[in-house]
Structure formats: C-alpha cells, structure tokens
Length: 374
Image 1 (cartoon, one colour):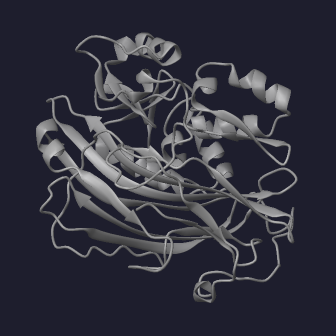
Image 2: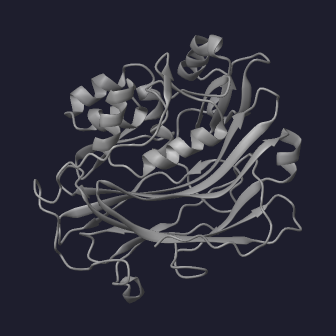
Image 3: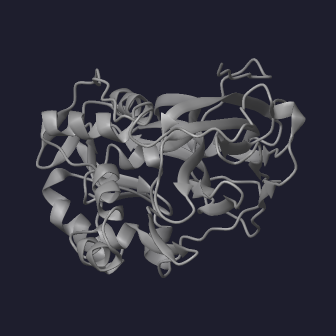
C-alpha cells in the first residue's frame, strides 16, 4: 500500500533556483535485507515470456486535445493529472491510447527506437530533436537508450519535439531547462533547442536556462540540498546468478507552468524509477519493488523539515517505481515562490522515516539499489 506522511501541519510551496551539487551515492545492497521481505518475493521464479507477460491493454480514461502534434492542456491541474494517469499504465496501453487520439509521445517513440539495431537506432535519433534529448549507452557491450533530459512521466505528455501546450503557452520542462512561449514562436523555440542559443525577447519565459549555458552533459552527480529540477542519471546493477539487471533513476522535479495573468502554477514531485532488463539484451516484464524516504523544506530558514515516505509494487511491467507529489500551489507570483520554494534536504537509503529510498525487482534475489542524498 502506498502512503505519504507529512510531519508538519503546513502546506509548503514551490520554486526553482540554481542547483548546487557535486556528489553521487547510489549503491546496490548486496546483502539480503530481511526487513524488505514484506514487499519482495526473494525466490528465483520469473514471469515466463509469452505467458504471464501477455501484453494486456488497459483502456485509459483520459481526455486530451491534440493540435499541431502537441497535447493541449487547459491548465496546470489537467497537465499534472495526465502525467499521473499515464504513469500508472504500461507501454502497450499508452501506445493504443495514442493511436486513438492521433498523438505520438516522446516516451513511445523512444521505446520503439530502442528495440532497433544500433545503426538503425542512431539513424532514427537524428530525426527531429531526439538526438538532443537522449543518449545511447552501453552495458556489457549491449546498447540501450536513455532519455537524459526528461523524466518518464514528463516524456509521456511531450511530443517528439519535447513540446507541450499548457494554457496559452507551449514549452518544455526538463533537466536544466524550463521555457515557455506563445505557439506562434514554435519554430524559434525549436531552433533554440537545436543551437543551444538562448532565445531573446519578452515572449520567452525562461525559468531555468542552464541548458543554454554549457555543453550537453546530463550525468549529474548529487549531494543535497537540491533546489531545482534534478535527475540522478541512470545506474545499472546486475544479478549475475539470474541473468537479470536493473536500471535505476531518481528525480526531484519542481514543475512550473505559466498563467495568462502573469502568475505561475507549481507542482513538486519526487520519482524513484526502475527498468528491468535481461543482462544480455532487453527489457522484460516483472514485478518492481520501490520505497521513498525523503525530507524537504522551504527556502525560509525558519522552516523545519517535512518527511515524505511511500512504498509499493508495480506488477508485471518493464518499468516500475513511483512518482509522488510533494505539493501543488497555484496562481502565485514569481517573487512569492522565490521566498517560499521547496528544497530536497535528505534522501535516506535505509530506514529513517520509512523503509529507505530504494528500488528492486523480481529477479534481483532481494537486493536493492539504494539512494542517498545528504
């Protein structure tokens, strides 16, 4: 059962500021954790290809307008809701839903490309903006594709140019970039992505422009405190006895969109994401086990820490984990948010307020990849 515990009585707000971080510490726990037996089956039983891994398509109850190849959301609330709904569905269900509404997301397009041979993968990534937002990595000689700039949930609502429309604005929210403008400036926005040159003019609202200030390098190491959108990068761990491996990723993401009146809406999320793979090649469906144990605070130094915990299982999917919402605040000024923003203070790898911040899946013999940020 998932749960979130708030140890304070107040609602915290969100803002973006510059990340200050230099250290990574994501580790694999190679000893069997007896305290984890309530949420993981440590037997070697695997789901059988073609039997329990049947591609079950679950209808998605979500109405979204599509125009000019982009999803169109009337407001921040419907935008966040769509991400939350899609995150809970498997790839097959999302693909069927996209065909129904006439849309292609960054998520499903990259899932298609990753199944191709390396040369075909490289050729496909040269189309549009895909090469800008992805990296081809290798593990034990086998290539795999990582969407370096965007979280899984965000990639599900972005089109293949990594764009979405919320209210009257089109834009993108990813690692080192949050930028919005009017639809008439779409081509200029895409050109700015491709050239990595910051667009100039009051019609471009740049809440995070670090993307334009350095070369492409999304292998972000970590130490807390975190004050802006941050991705840990992908870490891979192997269970050689079962020919299985797990890709893990942790993301702290304050999400900002703009209102026509000049104010902003914010939702802050923390994600623990896993992908199950056979060591020799590809993704496979299984059960994923996850837990989150973090603390946040506001930019106000007088504010204490707030603990957030969650744990659970994602059943019979290639991707697992959770994407918890810390808080949402709507229709506020930029100056107000700068004063009352959210910081990630701690991510505990072992039990502190909950079960620790960790990921595993069936096939890892009870071992967990644990994450710490302090």
